[in-house]
Length: 137
View 1: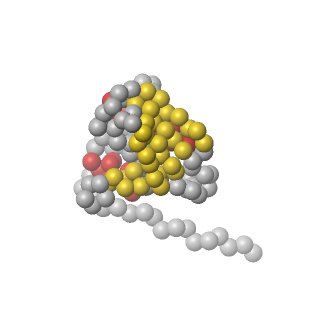
View 2: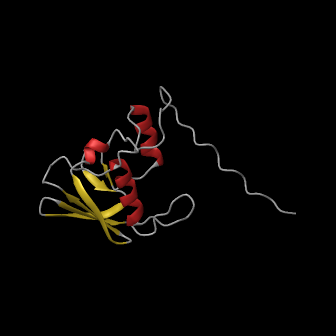
View 3: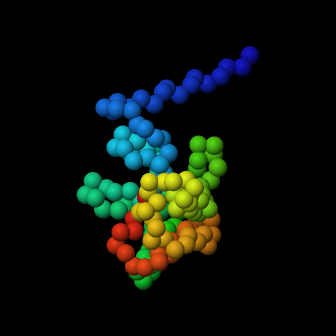
């Protein structure tokens, strides 16, 4: 006889209204953003004081004013147990920049000239011009 392990309890969140979108690349309303913060990790997040702190990136460097290099945390896994790689990060940001997706966040990343993945744990954003507005999520 085989027994199935008990199912995980449902994830319940009380908010004032339903989110309109669960894909953070497309979400624009506050409720979707709140849920997205609970469901998805970002390269960086803001702490209680509004300062950028590591999330998926364990550290980062800024070279000059146009090159941002992020070093990913080790052993971060997706829900299917696949390891997160720099290719996954590049795909996410390139999809936001792809006009076919029609992401409302595209304008926020148009200063990105290209995204490089020198190895599985490193992603580099090369900006077209220096700007204080670049803030990967």
